[in-house]
Length: 324
Image 1 (tube, rainbow, N blue to C red):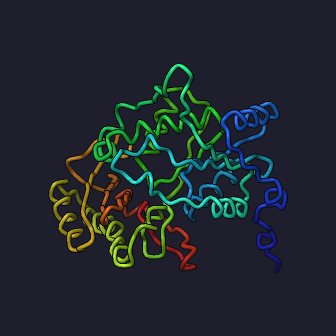
Image 2: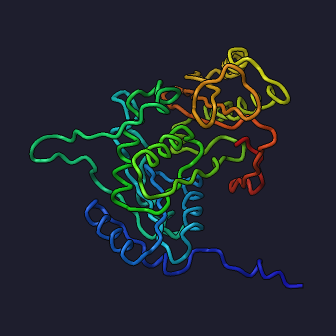
Image 3: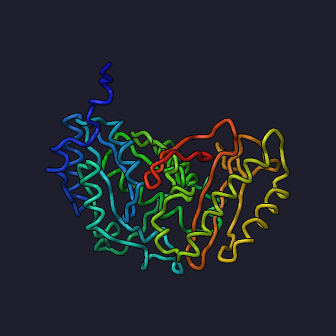
């Protein structure tokens, strides 16, 4: 018997490899986006800060699935200064545009929007307009990085106005960020849909991140403690509720067993309101941030044994069960 599904070529068509454009100015990108609008061309958008990895490419793949081969997929590459505090890693954030171009071309991206500047000063003075979400951004990342989400919402709003996508795809690793972007889109009537795709992980469970590059071999080995803490939390609430302070203390001690790890925060929260919960039970979401020297990693998952997902780990060429 012939299985016709096996005969389908799902690789990007040749014209994507030949025509990928690199656009450096907001004006040029917006002109192209308006042209696509007039032609009723579907546009999928993946905003990034570059130094792409398989997690980013999975978002590109999802965008392509949504808009189809006749649609257009745009990836932005811009290390946004307004989401970094002065003491954070803006200057050393990893960059490799030549590599990013190769990966985007191979993934079938139509346009890379890589502006040199997004906050150019006007003749009358400096840049002074920001977008601020005031409810979902208070806790977790918002508490640890007070100016972070103001920078995120501002740059994403600007990118949406420039790229004019029908759909934008974000990763669940930055769950709070995705929730805030969804709220901004709803509250400010942006005419697009936000898709939140599952977290992409290494073969040992570590969430893929551009910042993983910073880790020493010893730190990389110990960094899986974030994933292990999520696993431990999931097991702790199987079939019962646990007081949040009790579970936080247990996980804090568990993480402290790794000498390279320094806990920033652990939070258990309602996935819809992002409000902390007093009792941790199946369906609650957990987020955490852990430092390894100056490198700060984040992760999160829904604590529900009935919601296990099986994701594909490209590096190990096997399936990996994760909590998300």
